[in-house]
Image 1: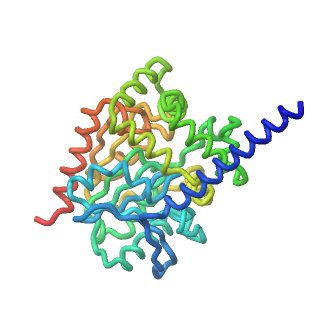
Image 2: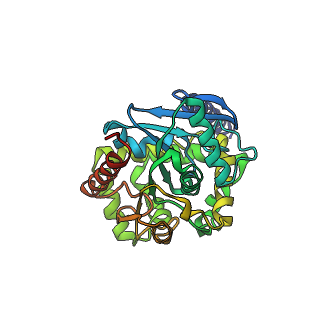
Length: 330
């Protein structure tokens, strides 16, 4: 028995050591390629990729400036993707900037500090309300708007977020880093198995259709790399926790957004099989913004970039053509 106890103690020590090394590595990596500036409205951490006309990206939930990879194709197409950490994420304090209006104005203050006058605006998922507010509150600075699986109306939390042990675990500050350590390591070691949870939370597909999609995604090296990049962009989780909880609060309490104030051309991309926020958000945006265009992409539900590579390339090309038309100088 003494030998077993000693062996278990050694295993426990090794696991704790592994976890501490991992946490140090991901903490250093999270802000290795970003900067923090002090704007007139407060400090903002941000990341920049590429050169060319600027695309101001309001990232989705759980990630931060390192969630830019969903717009990697725009960098390749000659755009400069500027991704500020929204309030409560990493080096941007939540403070009193939690509302979509204040998030939008903080982003405008960042543009002032960086000397950037005019941008295209993209809003992904939980970044949708702030992107919409930016376009309405700062119309002279907004050349075009692209909304990707974006929230645009009050949206209740899913049963997975409120009614499961894992959902409660990842919403508890004390266990944030250890919970996402386990999620991250499992995603890297057993990617196909982990993606079954995405089928349940991000899509409305059947289990059989989900298995087909998982196989399709993992057969494409670029998509598999993006799956792992998303997992890595969520850690360490604790410095993102105030922003995540604020996003959920905004999502549940969101009032009517100022769609009528948006003057810029607007492209909306969403999926009828979105199991996270629902297709109704994309339809609502299209109905409320005059002269907007709705592009329906039935891929991996909320995660519209995954599935048939040809479909992904097609809608990415449409986004690039849209920005070429409205953002690039004639």
